Image (tube, rainbow over all chains, first blue to last red; front, side, top):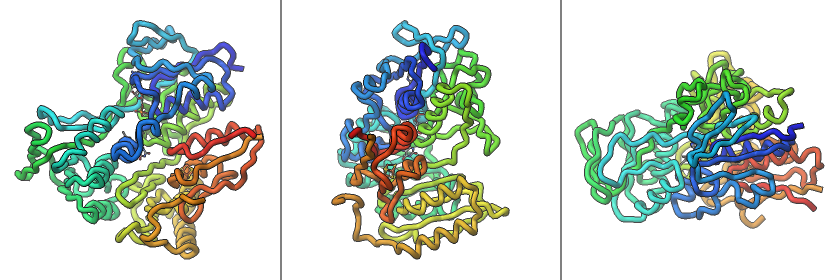
Amino acid sequence: MSGGRTVVVVGSSIGGVRTAQALRSEGFDGRVVLVGEEAELPYDKPPLSKQFLSGQWDADRTVLLTPEAAEREGIELRIGVPATRLDVAAKEVHLADGTSLAYDSAVIATGASARPSPWRPESGVHVVRTMADSRALHEDLRREGPVVVVGGGFIGAEVAATASGLGREVTVVDPMPTPIGRVVGPEIGQYFTELHHRHGVATRFGVGVEGIEGSAGDLRVRLTDGTELAAATVVVGIGAVPNDGWLADSGLPIENGVMCDEYSRALDAPDVYAIGDVARWFHPGHREYLRVEHWTNAVEQGVCAAHNIAHPDDLRSYRPVEYVWSDQYDWKVQIVGRPTRGTRHELVGELTGVKPRAAVLYTDEDGHLLGVVTVNWPKALVQCRRMVTEQASFDEALGKVKELAAAAPPRRAASTDTGGGR
Amino acid sequence: MPVLKADFAACQGYANCVDAAPTVYDIDDDGVVVLLRERISEEERPHIEEAARSCPVSALTIEDE
Ligand SMILES: Cc1cc2nc3c(=O)[nH]c(=O)nc-3n(C[C@H](O)[C@H](O)[C@H](O)COP(=O)(O)OP(=O)(O)OC[C@H]3O[C@@H](n4cnc5c(N)ncnc54)[C@H](O)[C@@H]3O)c2cc1C
Ligand code: SF4
C-alpha cells in the first residue's frame, strides 16, 4: 500500500481540498499535507460573485474544509503560508516561512488570479477572485451610485446581476459585440445580452475602455468611442492568469499553466501532478493541450490525480467532458461539451420572458452532438451531459430533448423557488 | 450501514452528483436531486463519497447508521 509515502498538495481551494480528500477515498494511507497561501480556512469561489457578494450567504457557507474535518480525514493543514519554490530533484516544496516539505508526490493546485486591471485610478476599482476581493466589493456595492462592470463574460455578468439586485444602476462594457458569444456562439449570445436589458442593466458591447480616472465614489470611465461613464464603483472582470510564477525556476515546462501529460503528471516530472485552473494537460479525447477554468474540472481532475497517486499501477487518463454553470438574474445556465465547435444549433423552448426554460443543442457537419446549453432546465442538462459523453448523434439528442419537453411542460413564473417543504 | 442524505432545499440542480453516481442520484423535473436509494454498501462508499463531494453546494452527505 501507500504506507510511509507523503503527498504535498499546494493550493487549498476546491482543487487542492478535493484532491486531498480523494486520496483518502482512494485508499491512500500515507501522509497528506495541504498548503495554502491564504490565512482563511479553505473556501469556495463561485459564491464570491453570487450569494456571498450579495450578502445572502455568510463566509461559513463557503468553507470547504474545517479543521475538524481535516483532522478526521487525516489531512495536515498548513495555511497562511505560500509555497515559494519547488525543488523537483530533491523532491521538496519550500515555503515562505523558511521551512520545506519533503514529498513522494506533489500536487500543484495553485489555481489562477484575476487578471489585474490595466487601469489604476487612486481607488474604487475591483477585481473578484478571493474572499477579500468579494468582501471589499460588497462594501462598495452597498453605497449609492452607479456601477460599471468591465468585461461581459461569466464573472462580469454575474457581478452585474448581483449589483443590480442590490439596487445599483449597472452598465457592462466589453469590446466584443456579444461577449458570451465566445462560449455559446453569437446568435445565442444575443439572448444573454437581452437578459441584461430585461433586468434594467445597460450594456456597451463592442466598445473598449480607454482609461479610468478619479477615485472611489467619483470615477470616470472613458470609452474608445469617445463617450464617458460616471461610476461610484468599477469592477474589472477580464479573465484570469494561472498562478505558476512560483514554479519559474523549478525546471517544469510552463506555458500559461503547468504542462502535463494525459495523467495530469507534469511533463518530465512524473512525481509532480497539476490540476485545476493552473494545469494545462493533454486531453487524449480532443488530442490537444487544454487549460480549463471551471469548478467541476478542478474537482474531477483532482480525483483523477489522487487515483493515479494512490494506484500507480492503474493509471487513469483524464478525459473529461467540459461542464460549467453560471447563475445570472433568473437564469440558471448550464453548458456541457464544446458548443462553439459546432456549425449549427437548434433551440428547444424559449429564451425570452420571465424564468424561461430552454436547451440549445450544437452540432457539426458530421451530425455529432458537440455541446449543449440549457437554461433553467437541469433535467435536460443531465440527459445531454450523458449524450455528449456517449457521443450521441445530434438527431437522437434533439429527439430526446423534445420528448422531455413534451412530457413536462415548462412551469411558468409562479414557482420562483424550488425545493423547500419536501 | 452508510445512509445517503440530501438537503433538498439547498440543491441547485447542478447535477454533478448524477453524472458521478447515476445509480443513486437522479434529478426531477424541477431540477432537484432525487435519491434512488438511501442505503448503500461499504464497497460503494468511496465512489459515492466522491460523487457527494462533487456537489457545488455541499447538499449531499453520507451518514452511518
Ligand atoms: C468569482 C468567481 C465565480 C466563479 N463561478 C463559477 C461558476 O459559477 N461555475 C464554475 O464552473 N466555475 C466558476 N468559477 C471558477 C472556479 O471557481 C475555478 O475554476 C476553481 O476555483 C478552480 O479551482 P482551483 O483549486 O484549481 O484554483 P483556485 O480556486 O484558484 O485556488 C487556488 C488556491 O491556491 C492558493 N495559492 C496560489 N498560489 C499559492 C502558493 N504559491 N502557495 C500556496 N497556495 C497558493 C490560492 O490562494 C488559492 O486558494 C468561478 C470563479 C470565480 C473567481
Ligand atoms: S450536485 Fe448538488 S446541487 Fe447538483 S443536483 Fe446534485 S445535490 Fe443538487
